[in-house]
Image 1 (cartoon, helix red, strand yellow):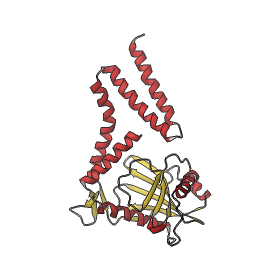
Image 2: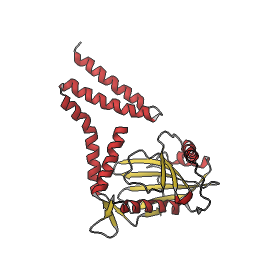
Image 3: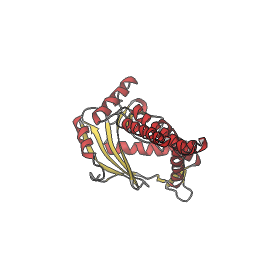
Image 4: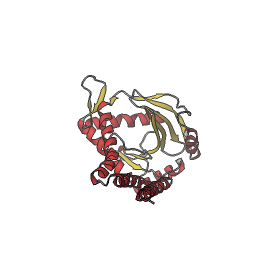
Length: 273
């Protein structure tokens, strides 16, 4: 039996082990699976070419290509300073888990406000917003479309003292904007249900000894989230990640500093898996 057979079996074993890791509920195990994929690519190129340079180049391409795409996309992207949440129904056909996630939130005493679209926006973004029946808690189920690609995430928020917003979410990718300093964020990728995400949020508040602000006004969910989106855009303008688009008073775009920021975020996300 030729050595190429053993090489093929070795690489195949790494891929199968990686696929098994991807099935785990533990985030660190899934990250291990990603690195096993990188290892299988590197070893496959090494077995074929016996070139360290080509092996390293093949692995590096998995990082360089997404970072390059992020840089290109950020230079083309435009935001409207007037974007806001407008009523707009979310279609369960485009988001098959919408119904089950809505039921999960209702089961932990959240009341649905309405469906909204963030408009105008170069990326299609929809939100189903909720407010808790008895506690000062807000929640959202979000779906984002960009061409053929889509992702969804959920977030739970509590207004705290001195204007702080405590947020727990499961956003799966590197976020393209920097959050304002009064946003205190816990990214929880291991929650498998709205109930688990809420439990993690309450633990987040407990660890930080956060008591919901008694002075925080009880707002409609739409107004609450609208303020968050506007604050995020304004903060990124203030720190220079966004800048006024030269041909429009209404539009803003990534500055070069913002382009390097989002590219770095993508690279870090790829390394972390």
